Length: 350
Ligand code: SF4
Image (cartoon, rainbow, N blue to C red):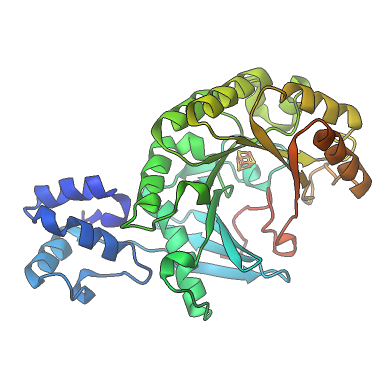
């Protein structure tokens, strides 16, 4: 079985080179070529010696993802569906804003976390994505942009930011996530800086601590309520890892990394959007260096939750701002093609 080089960090590629008798001096160059958009086979890599290409073709391959379906929203958001080798379908969402592009990346096929407001949860859990399947979502988006005539000085500048907020709980696929991040942040790979990557979690405390130790990226935590009973209704994971466990891990993360934590809070009408909820949230976050992202809940057919009215969102934000929190109301994008937060659920007819 050939080794998929897209799965390997530069260090792992060095080990592979050693195992097949290739010179260590060519590792960096091959790594760079493999991660360029459009990379498919070794034969076309004219800057590598013929003998090296022959050995690579004998022992290795370069995987890629091609969208099985692409949907474009009226606001310019583009949703990609990819069918994986085993038939599982995953989605990524490319969000343009003010001349920049953010890619929302999936980390698992389906999800086991069961959040009640999320369509992905309804798919159940199929499997973890490999590092290559995570990295290839980024490359596929870059290839789509090149095909659409988007011009940047370098291919690295095509996608500006990555957010791991697509299908799946990234921290539940921890080892593959770290490998993918290592590849994406490698200057010879995709070269994303730590400021341009955000990993979003529903709140797995031990993995939040691991992340602080293993790699530097932005951390976003979906909180949605600081009341355990309310949060457990919405997010079953809260029955195992309650609000205080999650916030304690966030405080440790902020101390260890000297970074703020992004708190995500989807406002649901008559559920978690009262002024008293905002006051409680401010009280519980008092000792956490954080920024708060409020999001008007994206309604999903057949789910009972409704989006908060604008007035409630304004009042909620004002209370947090008055308490000294930097608070942003995030605009929902791509809802007309079910590409908004919580709406990814593997397009039908892919
Ligand atoms: S919100 Fe995220 S963690 Fe929760 S079920 Fe959906 S994909 Fe999984």
